[in-house]
Amino acid sequence: MHPKSEGQSAFPLTSNGRGIERNRMSITLTTESDETKMSLNSDESYSLSVTSAIIGSSVKVQVQIYGATFFGVRHGLESLGQLLAFDEENECLQIVAEAEIEDRPAFKYRGVMVDTSRNFIPILNLKKVVDAMSYNKLNVLHLHLTDSNSFPFYSKRIPYMTTYGAYSASQIYTPKDLKDLILYARLRGVKIIPELDLPAHVGNGWNWGPLMGLGELAVCVNAEPWRQYCGQPPCGTLNVINNYTYLVMGELYKDMLEVFDNDLFHMGGDEVFFPCWSSRQDMRDWLKNRGTNDYMDLWGYFQGRAFDKLIEANGGKYITPIVWTSDMTNRARHFLHPSDYIIQIWTGATQYEVRELLENKYKVIFSNLDSLYLDHGFGTWLGLDHFWTIKTWQNLYDNDLIKIAEHHLGANSTYYAITTGQILGAEVTLWSEKVDQHNMEMKLWPRSAAFAERMWSSPQNRTITVDARLAHHTNRMKNRGIHTDRLQPESCYQISGYCHDSNSRL
Image (cartoon, rainbow, N blue to C red; front, side):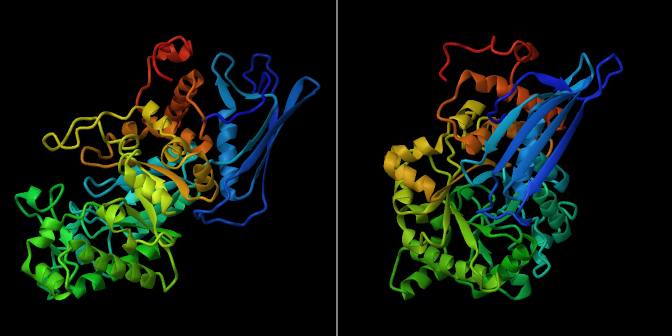
């Protein structure tokens, strides 16, 4: 939303033919970096200055934007747009007469996750998500590309994945489609990271192995009654004792890394349901032959091989993997070394596991479900499961990562965790059980805009001015074609501040 600035009265910039002089604005953009590919450590800082001078009967406005990188310059341009307004009565643009802004993000990872497996989201609609992210200075679009429901990512090395896993021939992401989306996003200051969720959350798309002589690549696929085999239907978990599984997985990693050429890769890793594996004699025998009866050892064996396959697919070069919090991050962290992995926290912000991850120096991304799950609160798709309270924009705005860390670590250790980059940032999540291209925008916006200000400036408190600023920014997004949810009646926008409930908690 609005950056902090020092401003004076506004000047009109265009003539309406009613006696207003045509004023001029010149914009100078400067960067000393030739970086065109965003990484986790890209410098997104910028400075912006607006000066004006009266020359005769007209005004000359000069704008200078300096960015450490192209991405910083883009943020400066977004802030410039927030200093402009259209005067309907005089039919002209207006801009503040003077402004000086020095700006940089509080957190380097400011993300949005979209689930494209449970319901397919067309590329055109993903581009609109990118557009809105750029308007809010959000910089990571995380695509949960595959799940047990469907496998829409087309693999040129293993085309059977979409043959058996896509909902239809028209609901597939080709490499060409995705590369187009990635370039579109990069030009708007957004990087895209893929998720291949393993070893759980697989099924449809992995069920062709026996027909090709590779044996079962996944087990418990579409098993019933599903509650005995997985956390959510349709069921499916990788067959992690089948060597062909790793052959296929390695080829998929190669295909994805060729398309998504960046420094991060999401390996999934959540909700492994041991009763699926324990229902099989071959899995029980595998553990017995290794002198253990703990299925966490089987999961750890998989994770080690998966990590090796990912590095191998990346030409032997290290790429940073991200995994969700899980039973492994809770009680078997020795399989996940802090120097190797980023942990994405989806459990509650106050749970003890969060403290342990921070104390053990894991780099973390917060997606705590008590504040950042955008799909919650719209009714349930399955019995009474996942019947959570709706997350208002206030919930997202108040999800202060510094306060969460201080709750677990205290002020001094939190300062260290922030300054060393251990707390990378946060990501809102839009799981798509009840989401598709027709309703996703209103579930994302403007709540994600409130989240974006939290991630960019990390304000100490929420004040009454946020309400008016968010309402104004929501209108700005609507005018730029984003179908946002409505915050309040139009009258509250026009008489800003009069609709605030003085008894409500700020």
